[in-house]
Length: 435
Image (cartoon, rainbow, N blue to C red; front, side, top):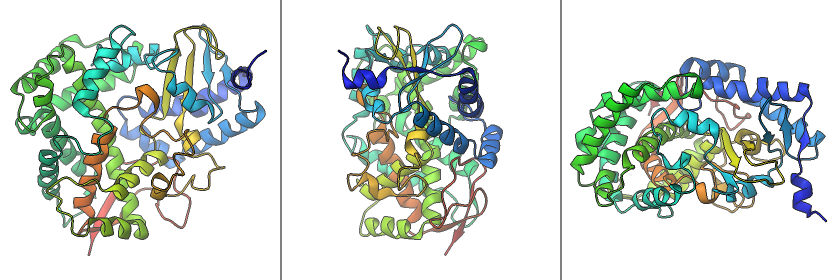
């Protein structure tokens, strides 16, 4: 006799037409936007056409038609399952690294361009030690990292360098964000090393093409040499100093992944700033939290952290979470690829907060009641840098909104009076200072 769960997770097979619609309306727009490195032109088009909206509508229809069971797509030579029930999300993510491994053939092909020994694509033998190293340095589960004090001071200095009297656009914010990231990860000596992150960007653009683009071995070697030199300084007050105490041989690959992830964190921070600029009640709450706070020192800033979490819920920086089965399961044979399209579960029209900015749901228990909300993934493979990212993002936002007001100057209208857009192009979003 099969269990209720096994019955629910027994796949139904998609028709050819359904498979083609998933490919055209879900997979292709996501891939076109750039999975490893966002493409500004593609994201601008996605923002204008709101590609994620029809994708969510399609998956809702498929969920209803197939009673929430996984949908086996007709992909030649592969077994690919699409999760359609939110109840399956926590079970899939809790099953890492076996039987639902984060290391999938697609990720190995993509991330191998710049971090072939990264923990995310490590095999069962290498993964535990690399994950322990990553957690020892990034300290997940601690709202304030042991280096929160020098990090807070670095954020204060970089935030002060942003122009307060002219339009703030993505390029201006991004330059400041990367200076901060290089300081936090590698030390002040790396603050101005744009060559390092430019090299990583080129490798990540190649990674968008996964197996269809040959590896640029010389470029990766130059990037690694430069990265290793920064790590070798082990500058006090940076993650590099903590790394130096571990002796981890694959540290450069893990750090390359952290830099990659901090790019998405910058996007989330800038989008959150836009939400605060257009949602006066949320801005008032944020400023109330900042009353009396010394921002040159570390603060937990619970409300601003919740604002960042909800921005990532609204516009996930990882729209596709992939898992690959290591053995036969109710989802299919070993080697089955399982796809979780996070915008569907985060923007499910049945959710009362689906299309509105609602940071309180991360504070009042509603998010915990819906385990399909996974802004930083979940389970054993949850993003190990989530708490550090939330600290950096919330502290940067605190500096930007404490005294300065902004109003939206371009981009799809954000307002508490209307549903928020399904896709938000941060690259062409501009904010004007007010007050």
